[in-house]
Image 1 (spheres, rainbow, N blue to C red):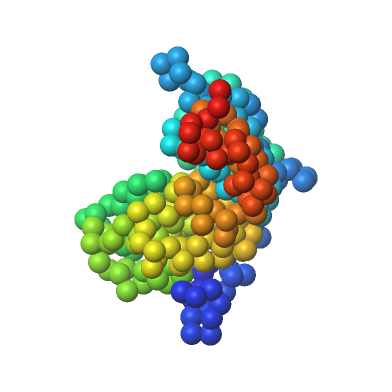
Image 2 (cartoon, rainbow, N blue to C red; image 1 turned 90 degrees about the horizontal axis):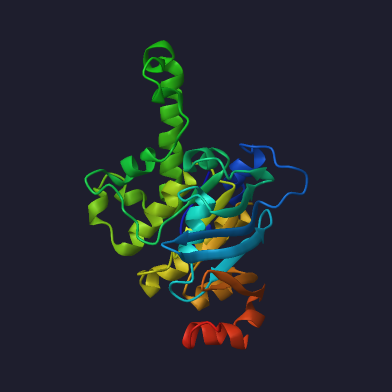
Length: 288
């Protein structure tokens, strides 16, 4: 899927962006004609009588990189959980490439081409970086006990392909030299990269990134921005939650703002960041 490493497509570390679009060339689920990659309509969920997400709607077109911003407690991560199938909404619909996935669990949505990362990466510390990558792929023949005996060649072939793919992704993310090391030794930024690599192992068409810059040192931030831009240029649709507005401005032509569980504003990034309602939501609390 990925070849090359740091520096975009510099001669010293060439990146084959065309290979990133494998999932788009052979989609897991055929999209309805002109359907958005992700279509969320009037989704709501309440906890203990308090609405964490309140009639929230958003549309992400295929190939788009949309930023989702807002103050802490706005409901952004809860919305991600609703989209990913971790939570079921009290009301509203979620569609992936035109398919209503409201009744499907998280694993089924992964099979439809959805992947996500989390604010706080939690790798398996006692396993190697490469082994952590190999935990991610699903739907393999070898998951069935009998298949390991009756279809051993197919199982071995898929395992080789998974290892090859994992090594390509680790090279793309500049983690190749750490492939054999325990994941517990990784820095915070490297754990973010490993989390991104694990999400990419499923060959997603839609990628949800939850604060990929949180806790990352400035030296690594530029690299993470480059990698996300490269992933998006390959044809993968990205929805990005982020508080680092420099990162949002560099990556996202369009942003949506959440406050108190609702959509507060949306539009071009340079316009939204000057919107008085957005400034108030970040600095003085969202208006009623």
